[in-house]
Image 1 (cartoon, rainbow, N blue to C red):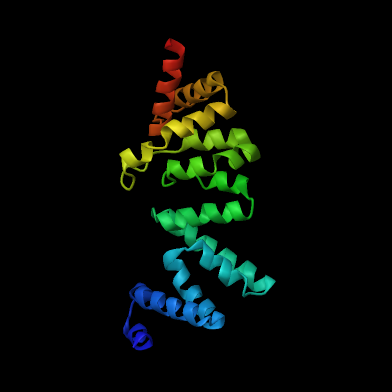
Image 2 (image 1 turned 90 degrees about the horizontal axis):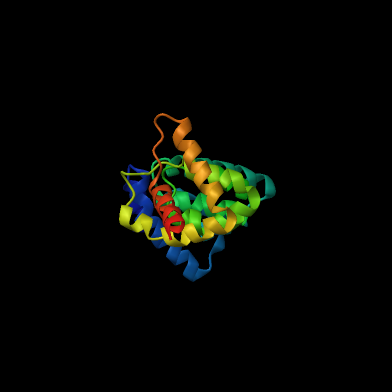
Length: 203
């Protein structure tokens, strides 16, 4: 019934529930060959990192490179449309590959601050100045981001920021960004950080 249902769907995304059912069946049956085939079709809709690892371990080195390039491009495109699963996949992949400089380049308006916090330490150790530039440059995603949830990580993010940068340096970088761009508007975390730094000065 599952296979017949998939064939009758004229849009690929309608197949996702049935592909997930097949995935469960092949996991139970330990049918790795068919599981890999199903996951390769399902993956662009779920961006499950463990599934990615399973798939690449079934491929030759040449096939693995092609698959990685294809999937990463698709994930980056989906990230631009605020697909949270795709955004997290890109960061998990860079973490897996220890590509922290590339990870910094992935920070944009759609990147949750909680995700930046999660990988802040290795990114800072890789390219400290570039990370701060990316955070300062980052704009807020007002359409897709819940402001209250986004700000929940700010205290911890501030703590780790002042661990890697002096308070004076942070203030000067933010101030220069505001002065050098006529249309610059600091994101919510920078507003929070400026407030915390000012509190320190006035304490």
